[in-house]
Length: 262
Image (cartoon, rainbow, N blue to C red; front, side):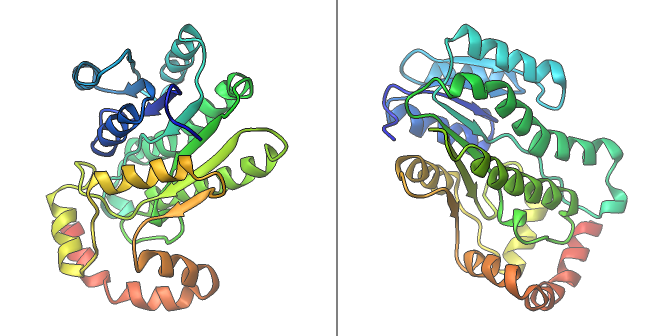
């Protein structure tokens, strides 16, 4: 795919990874429909980018938020690429998370991408090089302590992407899945960063994730990309010998619990 002159919708555009992806897409010649929950941040982002771009302020956890995005896509004459990047990832024990927090993770991380794709598929099918990118996570393949609801949402997104890719195999739409590891953005607070440092878990800058996304879009053969080593290896091991990963992560549990209790 050539990104130049493509109209690309990206959710979570006002977030740490979203801003960087948006900037790199525009640098490659794309036109953006930027979606996020903070109007001030979205306006500042669009104003900072060269070219003609629009933004939509929407709460993707609610039906009216989804509809606002779909309506704007119609107003703009359709899109070539949909990037489902918006996500939430609270850290903590499941028993201490509110019902609202758990629901938000499922609604924003999983249900919103499903509903957006469902609504926008007819328009995407009319494009010559349509693509959908679902932003997953290493935790969508490896369930991780104190990220149980988040892991569930990303496991679901990975399965949805796989199933829909097969459903649309006789169309021109490419279904892509990008799975970053931990990233240095506001989604991970100082507590999580300190925990990862103590555990020796590497964290990437948003630019690394954005670069991988661009490569995934431009590579006609790839459909899935995992970021980071040894995380890629752990994904494979977890799929065939999960008890090996169980033992490795059990050793981390005391540290994870200590930070979660803070």
